Structure formats: structure tokens, C-alpha cells
Amino acid sequence: MSMVRQSFLYGAVILLLANFLNRIVGFVYQILMIRLMGPEGVGLFNMVYPIYVLVLVAASAGIPLAIAKLVAEETAKNNLPGAYRVFRLAFSYIVALSILCTVILLVGAPYLKQYIFPNPKVYYCFLSLIPGVLIVPVCSAFRGFFQGLQQMTPTAVTQITEQFIRVAAGLSIAYFLLPRGVEYAAIGISLGVILGECTGFLLMLAIYFFNRPRVEYIGGGGRLPVRQITVRIFGLAVPVTLTRLATTGVMSIEAILIPHRLHAAGLTIPEATAAYGELVGIAMTLVLTPGIITFALATALVPAVSDAVALGNNYLVRVRAGESLRITMLAGIPLTALLLAVPEQLCQVFFNYPQAGDVLRAAALGGPFLYISQTATGILQGMGRAERPLRNLIAGSVIKLAGVYFLTAVPALGIAGAAYALSFSYAVIAVLNYGDLRTLTGLKSDLAEWLVKPLLASLCMIVAVIYLLEIEKLGIFIPLLLGLPVYLAVMSFVGGIKDEDVKLLKSIFKIK
Image 1 (cartoon, rainbow, N blue to C red):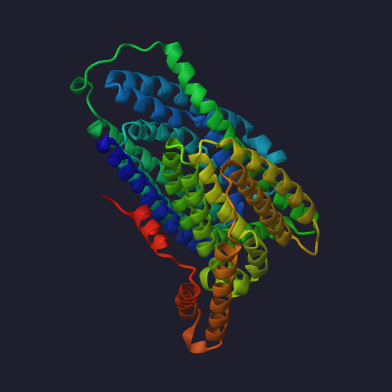
Image 2: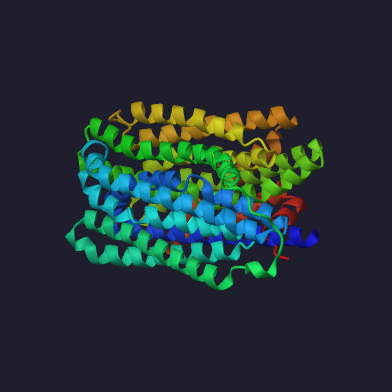
């Protein structure tokens, strides 16, 4: 039993570290894209990418997750032939769905260009992504197979490889195509995505053919009926697909709606595209950066809270939830304070585009609520109440789209109106998630620990940073770096950092 548990922990940490590395590389990628193509080029790519992701969700239909679960069940029964039978049948379904979605996209692409896309320049960028609809779901099926065998390294290795190839190839192709126009540079970024996914897929095939377990080494297992396997696959896949379709569907609507409403506010199509690029490529990139920490925390929380629930220990659930939310605020508030205090400087130093400062300031208001929502979602999922954050996400998304529709078209607000709508929706989702935690666990907030102490330390940090920024010789990075020890020193002085915090962080990133 301990062997299985240790393997699970090791696999979870492998995936966590891979995700952490991918997010760091992705942040650098966004910086280089903005510096290379400007907001308009990034806006063009991000108009079609959410729609591409939406189609990928439909093409995979949640089947990789079902593969992982059902293969794990058959392997636990010492029935490797049964695991392969599940995989082969599920694989056939995912190939058929991928082909169907690819054909639909090829036939429907001209209609998307005519009726949906806000800027006709995105058409060939979108066409460049279509091969991925065949590649990504099939590769995900192999990943689900290895995850079911509790072998997380293939997933981690292929994801990291994909990301590095995507960045290197995408930026290189975009650089050579840029003299022909930003729309061609956006095509280069799309081609980089496809090359990265092709490389990851070929690497996954090699791993499968040379490292998969052989059937002859594990006996047992009868033949499972096709109908029974099919019912189990789609019984698991459909709820997951609906959740992901809701999330990616909202992202796709935003990608279409925001440029349209900017155009209604009086901006030209290129101006609307550039403004949208400021929001998604600059402001949200910086706002989402602290999510690297909160995502790690949320990932670690699922098994930790699940253990407490399995023990029937509601007190332990409440304690872990409270501490997790406190640590989220401890990390999220100072980073948000920096985004609000020196947005123009941050946009300048990272993206060489200080004009996006106003948009960043509006988007940063929702930062702490976004981080709380991520952590609370991890807690609720660990409790087995995944329907609660889904319901709250849908409610917040409706409010967000309504806000985007009305605020973005106000000429005095423009793209900042869209950022305010996003921030308000994050606040709504955070309040709803927190309300569910209070109802289910009896959780009570400690304003002094969660809010007052981090705010006080953040204020001292900002004062120090602004003072140091006036010393021209220091530039901007040194004041920002010196702000961190100021924050930690004040937090330590007021008792905001505890020994348990250090232990928790060690437990999240510790590999045994």
C-alpha cells in the first residue's frame, strides 16, 4: 500500500514541477512575443487560439481522463490485457472524433472568417492550427494511458518538450515572417504551436512503443464487453467535457466579443486587435503570474483535503482550508500591490510597452479574487464537491460577458472596461466559492491574518520600491527585488509568517 502511495506522490510532484517549468517558459514566451510582434500580432493569435482550444476539448471529449481512470482500475485488478482493451477502444473513439472535428473545421473555416472572426487577418493563422486537432487528442490518449499506469514521467517529458519547441520554433518563424506583416508573424506563432505538438506526439509514440508494459508479464483478466467499456468511458468523459466546454466556450466568446465591442466604441479593426493584445498578452500575463504559486497550492490541496474527508475529520478540512487561503493571500496581496502601484514600469521593463499600464491596473484589481478562487476550487474538488466551483464559474462567466458587452463599448473605458469586467467576475466567483466553503466546513475568516498583516507589509514594500525607483542608477529590477525582503521582514515582525508556512511549502515541493 505504501508503495502505491509513494508512487502517487512522486508522480504528482513530477507533474507539478513540469507545470511550474512550463508556466515560467510561457511567461518568457509572452514577453518575447509582445516585443517581437507588438500587441496587434499577439491580439491576432489570441483571437483564434481560444476557439482552437474549444475544438480540442470537443475532439478529446474528456476521453483521456476516462482512459487514465479505467486503465488504473484494470491494472489494480492485475488485468493488463483488460487495460489495453480499454485503451484501444477509447483510442478508436478519440481518433474518430478528431477526424470529425478536423473535417468540420475545414468545411466551416470560411464561414468563421465571414461571420465570426473580428479581424479577417486571423484566417490563415487559424488554418495553421487545424492539424493540431488531429494530433493533440491522440497524444492525450497516450498520456491518459500512462497516467493510468501511474507513470507520470512520459506526460511531464512530452509537455516540457512541446513547450520548448513551441517557443523556439514559433518565435523563429515569426521573426522571419514579420517583414511581410504582423498577420504573417501570427501564422509563425501558430506553426510553432503545431511543431511543438508534433514533436511531443512523436516522442510519446516512441515512449509507448519502447517502454510500455508487455502483456505477457502480467496475467489475469477476462474480456470486457465493448458496450460495458463504452458506457464506462463516456459516463466519465461527458461530465468532464461539459465542464471544460463551459470554460473554453466563455474564453472563445470573449476572444470574439471584446474586439467587436471595441470596434463599436470607435476603434478601427487594427486598433481593436492591438487593444485586445494589450489585455491578453500583457495585463493578464502579469496578473496570472502569481497563479504559478496558487496553482501549485491548489494541486497539493486536492489529495490533502481528500485524506481529511476520507478520515471524516471536518476540523482538519477546516484547518487546511483556512491555512491555504491565508497563504494564498500572503503571496497574492504583495504581488497585486506591485501591479497596482507601478503598472507602467512593469509593462515597460517586461514588454517595452508602458501604454498598457492602465489596462494592467484595471485587471490587477481582480488578482486576489482570482487566486482565492483557484485555491478554493482545489479545496472543494478535494472534498468531492466539484459541482460547486463549476456552478460558481458559470455564474461569474455570465456576469463577465455582460460586463464585457456593456463596459468595453464605453469610449472612455475601452479595453480597460473589459479588464474591469474580468476583475468583477473574479470577485463574484471568489465570494461564491468562499460562501460554499463556509457552508460545507464552517470555515471562519481571520481578517487580521488573511488581510490586515499582508496589506500592511505590502504597503511598506511599495513605499520602499517607489523610493528606490527614484534612484535612477538602480533601474527597476533592483528596487523590485529589494521589495521582497522588506515585505518578508515586516510580515515576520507582525507575526504574519509562521513555522507551519515553511513546512507546508517544503511538503509541496519535496520529492521522496
